[in-house]
Image (cartoon, rainbow, N blue to C red; front, side):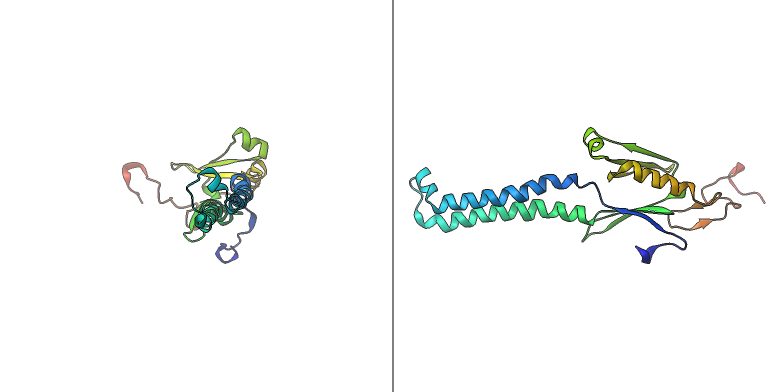
Length: 199
């Protein structure tokens, strides 16, 4: 992050989404190997032959491999992608902007200059209130609003953001690319009476 900081910009908070999204993958990571081990032991002891008499004994290695394959598919196809997605998501609040980064192999960045923020709102479900997390909605005057989901300690994060907005120099408006426009000049999106600039 230091390589992409603007002049005079300081990092305030770096965090990830609230880790509740890892609860189900964590349970699967514990339960699935235990079930696979139980199933393999059941197959080795001749359980399939007792359940279905026509199953030959030489199918045992294939059945064991099938149990291990299903377990590996659940762990690698379900648990690992969710852990990697959580690990690769970051919320970075600096003194001038909010940066959200998603993805490890395919990176997606979203930046919101704090000077462009007009309204900061918090939305919480019942579970999020219990975990003190929530979604932060930022209105910049241009639809749609930017929503940062599952921010941990959302009230504290919101207060840090409001403090950073309050500390911005008065009369300066940052564009999306981080440039500062001269407040004495007309903004690029301003239109004057008559549709053109009279000098």
